[in-house]
Image (cartoon, rainbow, N blue to C red; front, top):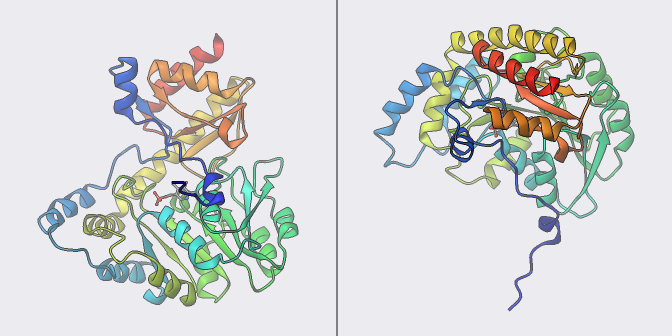
Length: 366
Ligand SMILES: *Cc1c(COP(=O)(O)O)cnc(C)c1O
């Protein structure tokens, strides 16, 4: 018997997640391990979300509300947008995946993405029969919108703009984004992935997907509860999109894709402004501190608008990653993303960052 697998699937690599703390402790016999690898919230979840999950747990024998009615109402109110423009998914990863499924149709269809950018766009494209077009970032590690525009053809269905970009932390400005959007042919959907929105939105030059969706543009905005809201483990994301896209996603998704605990947690977290404010303020101060220290040591941190710093080192990044790991600090090696001389460091609490800086200093002085 020969079971044949779709060729596009064979092109895919299984996702390499940041190492879990428990695994590193066990393998290396360490007591203290700090994870600065997956851009999680160093303060944990909102206490209000934890309380909501406790309550919701008593009803987990029931199927969740497949329409996420209560959460959609809360999102609609908070962002002043009709529920018909709201997407809710099992993480924004699921929404990325579903957008590929509902928008891509033929092997000649094209998806344009930055390089390096978020790895899940590759997966969304590869699961549909289509052609993935990768456009290198510019010299400042920012999306090169002019080059991306140049890569758009009559076959292009989706352009993914990750803003701030993971793994580099840079943003495209409102001026540049609007020029790009105005110049695009009408058949192209632009996905603005705003997973790090809360860390960037105070910048007046930051373009907001919601404004374009409200104006009826071909823009789909994606947000998540995994980063600033601290709910990565329970899996829930949301987004803003034209009604035709929301309708398509609702047809294609699993009926109970977002579980009841996640819905309860998200709604409670949405109402906890203090938790997000504390997270964003710590991040601002600590990103500055880490970046300054790295620059003092002769490294080149890329100015960040997110909760991580992408650093160009003066040597290969993988051995630095490995030595930090042995000392109990998990960061992200970026060699698989085609950036062998860099690492990506998530911003932790003040204390975690001090530990990181002490260890990193020792590694770099060796
Ligand atoms: C973390 C991240 C996501 C995924 O978020 P989930 O809601 O946890 O699936 C999406 N896009 C980018 C750019 C991310 O960094």
